[in-house]
Length: 424
Image (cartoon, rainbow, N blue to C red; front, side, top):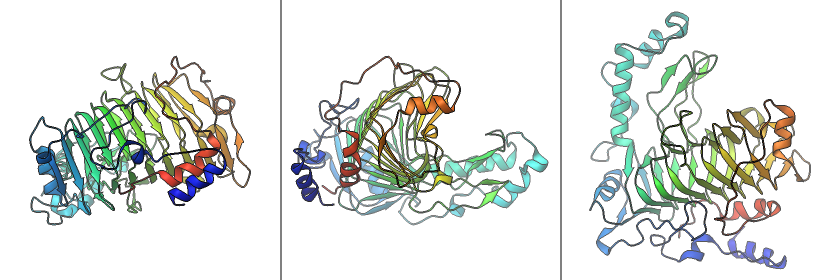
C-alpha cells in the first residue's frame, strides 16, 4: 500500500502518522534520530559532515576508501547500486576457491574431522589452521570497519552484497540499505555445539562491536535467497551467521523500521554469558520492524535493557521456526504491543525461549494463529504454563524514550507499509 493511501485510511480512523524520514528532513544523509526514539535517541552520525566529507560510492574499494578518509571528521557515505564484497583490491569478483589457503580443501576437512573417526573433540592441526587462514583471507575483503560520526545511507536500490559492516565507533547511522548474503566460505565444524555438533560461520550483515549511539533504520536484511546448503555429519553446512548482532558492550542503539527475513539466527544482543563488558550496557530499542520467515533470535538478549515494541512477526513455515524472544542471562526485555502471525501448529508458549534469564515484561500482545482472528495473548503466562522454570514479570525498569507507541492492532497495517529502504 502506498504511503498516502495508507495515511488516508488511518485518517478515517482519526489517526495521523508521519513517515520517519519526513519527520526528520528530506536529505537522507543529514537525517538524525529523534530526541525520544529509543535508546539511540539523538544519534546524529555524519549529519555535520563538511561538503568534502560527503562521498558517493558504488564499489567495495570506494566504500572502504570513504570510510577510512579524514579520520575523526564526520562523514556521509551515499551508496549507489550494488556493492559486492567478495572481490579483490581492484573490485574483480572472487570465489571461495580464490580465498582458500593452499592447505585447505573441504573434502579433506570433512575426511579429517568426521566425528565417526575424529570424535567429539574440537578440530585442530594443519587442516584446521588452513581453514582459519582461509577465513582470514576472505575477512580481509568482506569485513569493513565503520568508525565514529558516520552515516551510511543508500540511494534508491542500494545493496551491500556479501559484505559485513562492523561498527566499532560512537555515533553511527545506517539507513536505506539492503544487506544480503554475508556468507562464510569456510565454516568450522564444532562437535561440541549441541548434542550432535554444528557448523558455525563467521559473518553477520552488520555487527555492532563495542559501538555506542547507533541508529539502524529502514534497512532490509536477508540471506539474499542463498540459503540452501548441503548436509555434512548430519548437520546443515551453515554459511550464514546473524543478520544484525549487537555485542561486546555496545550500547544506546535503536533498530527501527527494518525488514529482516528468510534467515535463522536473526538478531543477537550480547554474545557471552560471562559478566564482562556487557553489564550495564546493551541498552537497545527494537521497534516497528518486520521479522518474517525467521527461525530465532528476534531478538535473543543477554544483560541488556531492551525495549521491543510494535514489531510484526510473521511465520508461515512452522518447521523452520524456533522462537522469537530469547530471554538470556540477566536480560531485562520490556516487550509491548507486538503482533504475531503464526501457524496454528506453533504453541503460544514457544514464542519465548529460556536462555538462563529470569524475567520478562510482555504486555499488549496480539496473536493471529492459523485462520483465527487476532486475540490478546499473555506471552509470559503462556510461556510459564508450558515451561520450567517460570519467568518473573518484574524487569526493574520502564521505558521512557518512546516517540509513539502504537496499539498492537495497528502494527500489521502500519509496519508492512513503512519498513525497509525507502530510497529517500
